[in-house]
Image: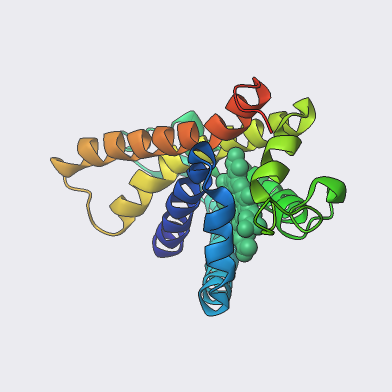
Length: 209
Ligand code: HEM
């Protein structure tokens, strides 16, 4: 779970950087560049899908095991300090999964709001207008709300998931642990701010289409 989670975090990091090119007018060029390298796009899709399948399978198994386990059997429980984020990993994970289906139907397959999609509209240079698609969609309150709510789930999932994955991989001694917990939360907050900045700023009409 730790390895699959970390590979997906890498994607989430790269994706937020790619998305932020919107603020400097570079999103269409970035999307066009990616589209011009199909082997890279397809290799990423296949690896990410494999990571997601393994991650979901292991998370279901872990949840079932945790439900079966009886914490009363443990004599020492001082390490069982659960936070809201750690107790709700399965729920925040399910919200992110549902968001991903919605997001792909929206911005990749263009089934939701097809008239605003990049497959229907091109920019002045004849490129699919990904930028106009994003801006037009986030001017709708319900769409911005869906994205912001999903990003809150992502924040909670990563706030626990990042530090937990490093602990699983062995970085869990007394000196490193507080550092890893803090660093994990900071990275989760930075990612959250990066992602919500797009719907939030567009919705507040700071960027016009
Ligand atoms: C406000 C937040 C987000 C925005 C504005 C956004 C924007 C976009 C856009 C514009 C595309 C289509 C790019 C293109 O057609 O060239 C896209 C694709 C995608 N996004 Fe996001 N995204 C957001 C959050 C996320 C998150 C949190 C995840 C993962 C958990 C994610 C995963 C994906 C995936 C897997 C694709 C499809 C890539 C492909 O195979 O073509 N996105 N996103």
